[in-house]
Length: 280
Length: 152
Image: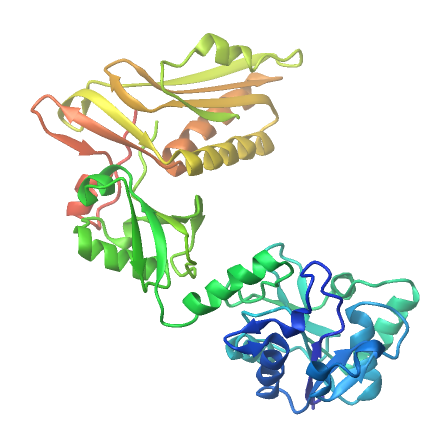
C-alpha cells in the first residue's frame, strides 16, 4: 500500500528575477498560488503551502495551511524536508509556484505513473532531458536520503534525483512544465494561456516552398486560426488552397526546425510544410 | 559552415583548399551535374529552391554525422540554388582523410543523406514545354507509389 499523497506548493522563493512575488502573479484573474492550490486539491488528500519563517503573516500565503521551513538550508529542498518532517506518513506531490501551464492531465499522468518504491517520480524536462523535481511525487522513504544529501552540502533537488536514479516519465507536451522567471516570460505566458488552452485563435506565419508555393500561389501568409496543431492547420490550409499532396507525404517544420504533427502551436509560430525533397 | 548554398557557380578550387590538412593522405569529391533527361523526358533546365534556414541546419547535422561515423579530416558540401542549365554543377561534396577508404565512404554518405533529408526541391523543365517538381507531382497523383529517386 503506497503512502497517501499530500500536496505542497513551494512559495518560499525570493522571485528575484521576476522582481515581484511570483505566487501573487495573476492568470485569468487568479493568483498563481491559488491556482496551484486548487489544482493540487483535486489530486491530493491535503494541500499545504511551503513558506519561509518571514512569510507566515503574508495574507496570500496564510490563507492556506502552511508548512514553515524548519530545516536549516535554502531552496526547495528545505521546504520538501520540512513537509516530510511535519507529515512523515505522506508522499508529497510537490509543485513550484511558477508553473502556470500545469493542468489536471499533467498531475493525473504523474500519479498514474508513480513508482512508490523509488525516492521520487518526476517528469523528464522537454528542454534538457533532466528530471523536473518541482512537479514530482516525493515518497516518505526519500527523507533519510535527502537529509544525507543535504548534510553533504547538496542543495539541488535535480541533482538529487539524478544521483538516486529517480524514474522519469515523458511530458504530455513540451510546454506543460515551462516555468516563469521574468516579467517577459510572464507576459508571454498570459498570451499562451489565453490563446493556447482556450478555444481561441492565434496568428501563425506560414511559408510555402516548391509545389506548395505554386499551388497556394503564395510564398508566405499570415493566418488567424483555431488550429491547435500542424495536423489541424494543414487540414485547414489544404482545403483553402487545394494542395494535391497528402499530409503523410509531407514533413512539418515549426520555427525552422523539424516538428511533430501533434505539437501544440503557439501564437506567432512560423510553420512550413515540407514536400518530398529532391536535392542533389 | 560545412554545408552551404551557392548562387553563383561553385568554386571547387577554393572549396578543395578548405579541406587541406597535413594529416590527410587522400581527398574524394563528388559533383552532381544537371542531366539532359529524366525518366524518358528531355530536360532543358532545372530550378532549385531551398528552405535555407532549416536546410543549413540539417546539412550541418549530416556533415557532423559523417565526421562522427568515419575518421575523416574535413568535409564540406555546397549546393546550388536558382536556375541551372544542362551540365551545370548542382552540388559538390569534398572529404579529406588520412586514408582513401573513409573519404570514399564519407563522401557517399553525405551525398546520399543530402538528397534524402535536406529541404531542397528541384523543378525540371522539359523540351515539350511542361515542367514538374521532382518527387512531388507524380506521387501526388498516385500517393501510394514509392518515391522515385532522381539519380545523377
